[in-house]
Image: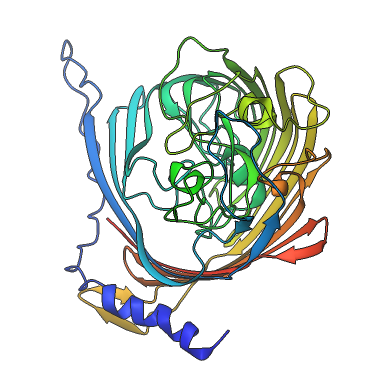
Length: 462
């Protein structure tokens, strides 16, 4: 990679870095506990509190230009003819400066008994689902929780339970990612939220169980790099140029876009075991989970004529079904590992999935090290360059099924490996810069190919 490309991220950083915020005062010592009230005095009730948050991300992205020819045409008079040759191609090749998302958060709590969370994304360039024509304002999460929920690898005070209702993250998802990119497993199986209910029960401090009943994320396809790509868009079928290329997509669980209470529910469950020392800096969490639902005949998605679920696996008007399709059952089982040793962290995940008789397996591991840097410079009462955090993630996807004889996305069954390596540098409180590189390797009918990407992210959070 040329020196010019390596300098661009830092030029972006200097251009977008906000002025340091005023110095924050150190928290005062906790006040002494008040004396118990006299006999007959009412106990104070739990306090109600609301917190607001903000996050914005700007990027320099450099994506390799790749085109893979696809010998394909629609042979149905109900569909427009496909003009010219068909390619799988990088969604947006070359060098780009772009704002991907502005996120607004709202959290409310009434003691430890009731909590609510809302996360709204504006622009949402990298999470448009599944094409660039999707909504630019998206409610990512919106849920209400009754009871106390312990974070992964943290010990609760004792037995307890919670009920969470709304649009919620998958219970096995890694929410403390140390890179801006996603691995193959997180992209394919649990990147996006689902709508429904989740029940969790702590059986003492170490053993816990969870159960979910949700709408189920529709099956579709997307590129595992930053941009999903445009597939099945009206522009592409008319022969016009869509905003993005197709990408080199894999099958994945797309985001739930509308609440559908009439379809078949997806049911899931998990059993976990966790341990931690008194400080919480050394902790281990093991989780085994599984899901089951029936795929719908079709799911309508924004910006594409392709339907999700079985419609995708059969092809429009059943033109190119995958060999071996059997029924409509979607099942998956997997296991997670969280390990924390001071500044070191390890996350691992394994998933075994079957899509209407089509099996595939994925695994992923991420290691990271958080390094607190010594105080050398300060501005406005804040330390400059407070931390450094290198991280490496390896992920793989093995598709144990055959492609249709003709298909517009033959990458659906390519075996895939992805190595993401990067480093995150804290610039000042609330502002950090992440530089990372994604190396994609996949096995096509013509041999091994690649589709790599450099991503630099300037993040500002308050």
